[in-house]
Length: 473
Image (cartoon, rainbow, N blue to C red; front, side):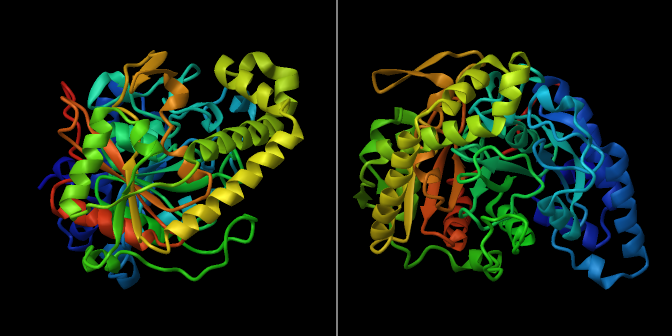
């Protein structure tokens, strides 16, 4: 099997091939760089390609293997190419966070913690990825860098704000990427691009070494084409980091071995009410297909999900506006108009509104905790519809005309508001030509459960993540 063919396989298969000497890490890095050069003019996933770094890292791994280094041979992501959303600090690169304002800043002096942990597990960084400005958006229609195109239909959005991260995996440029999720920015692009995405529990993975958006809502996590690859990346990144005040000092709880436990005995239910009312037929059909595969017949409701979404919006507006207020005062013309106006509105919100939003958030978390006394896993659509066309201003959801860019997070924001672990799984065949995702949700710290369910669905071929067929690529 050639390096280019192997690049289309899962990260676990790639690491095994390097470990067994069937391919070199250098050949894989070169194959990834060639795939990026071939496909990215069509997709626009990358903002920076770290070719020299990738080849140097791969050469070092190959040298360690040639010298018989047993520790190198045991690395779980040995030789696996990966890339990160451009809000992660990458040594020698300016951390843009999708903005124009940051372009004159000093390049990062060191890699962020999660990037270091991925490399310590044997992964090879090949670049940084496009996103919505300051992570405030759901479509990655970035006016500074240009929009990221959905690899399965280049006329459509990839989702956001981690659109470049999802598109790069869907296009077969790399098998794993890292992104961030504040209100849905991993789950939305995973759904629209037809791949797997994991938002861990709030506070599980450290966020220092990344550009913040909303400190009380920000999460970091991986994208991949398999649940096993998500588990490999997630396990490699776990660990306490004192420099992130929200990171919980909790023992590492690996998930890879738990995948084999399957779903027998798990109490699973679909989320109805709000989560059905705000979903188009293809989104509801995807949940029904997943539920049928898992033998799920029970439906439950999470009360006041609409209020939880409103609370997440207010908190995001207020914290984001406060963070960017100095630049908004002096460099407002360098912001994208949409994000600028929302940040300005957030900076002007009355404190009483934000206080009330936090009260709603705490109340909603208690309702979810009560629900999880009776169920282990919940299923809900990840997006209200499949990927809209680039430039779409309005979408119709069950007779309601809604703003497209804001509404792609309709079904993710209530869950983000209380920091639950979620795996987005891709389902095909519910839309004539596009994938759509389903959220697999569990109680805090039960990433093992959402990954077990995702893996079981993949084993049944209900959830699949094929590499996109790109004309001429």
